[in-house]
Length: 218
Picture 1: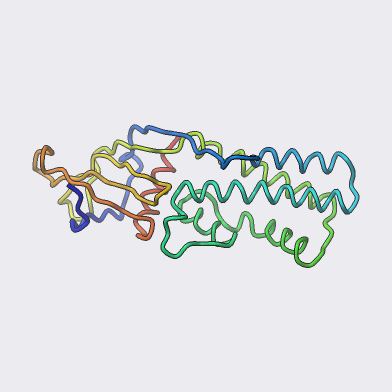
Picture 2: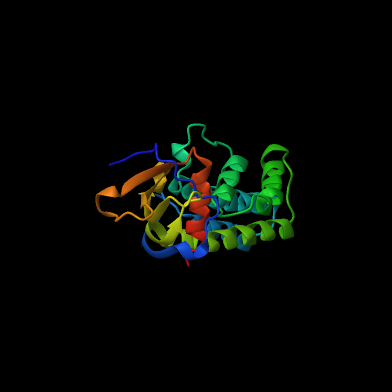
C-alpha cells in the first residue's frame, strides 16, 4: 500500500538512524568523462602557454566541471523537479541542498569562466592552473558519491516528531527524485500495518533526508 496522507514528519534526524546501505554506481553519459577533459586541459598547458593554450585549457577544464556537476545533479533528481534548475549556478544550489557541495566554492571559478567566454579575457598561467586544480579536486571528491550511490538504507530506531511512527528503511529512485520511507505505528507489530511514505524532490524534506543519507554514506 502506498499512501502520502500519513503525517510522518521528522525534522530532527540523527546520524545513528542510518545503518546498512546498498549501493550502485553513477555512470557518465556515453562519451568523454570529466577526467578525459582534465587530461586535455593539462595537455594544453604542456604544449605551451600562449593565449590559445591558456584559453583552451580553461575551456576543457570547464567542460570537466560542467559534466561532473550535471551528472551528479541528474543522479540525485534534478530532472524530476517541476521547476528545473537550468543554469550552472542553480545546479550548484541544487547540489548544496543535497549536502554535496557549497556553491561559494565555485563562485570565483565560475566568474573566471564567464569573463573568459563572454568578455574575451585572457587568463594568466596561474589562474588556469588554479582552475584546473580545483576542478580536479572536485571530480576526485565526487568519486564517493559516484561509486557508492545509495539505493537502500536500513534505518534503526527512527521515530517521527510526533512519536507516533517508526521508520525502518528508506529506498527510492533518486534519479527520479523519489525517496520512500517504510513506516509503521509505534506500539503495533509491523506486519500488515507497514506502509510506504513517498517524499519527492519538490518537497524540502527530500533534501533533509538525502543530505543525511549522504553524510552517513561512508
